Amino acid sequence: MSAATTRLIGGSEAHAAFAPHELASMQPIIEAVCLELGVTAREKSRRKAVADRVMAAYSRGTRLPLNMVSAGLAEHRV
Image 1: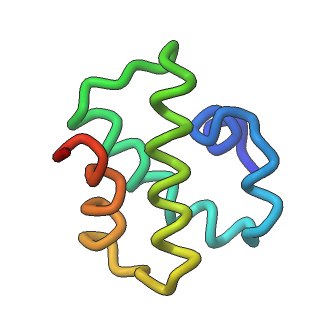
Image 2: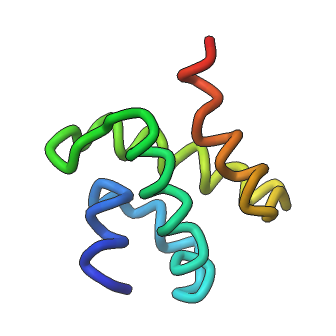
Image 3: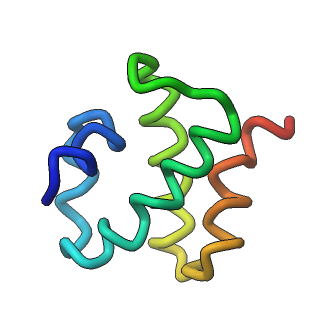
């Protein structure tokens, strides 16, 4: 796993449930959502929240990029 992926998910153990290629497919989506929301690299808890939402969607089988982006933005829309 890359250092960037570890940074995106806040260094949590959540990544253990995913294969490296799965994390690699989620990484650009998490980055895009964070960029859209203005979440900086220093905002670890916000980045982790975005990553958690994207990974939860992926786990549920929602693997189309647009659907994962929607999941990542979900809390922001409330």
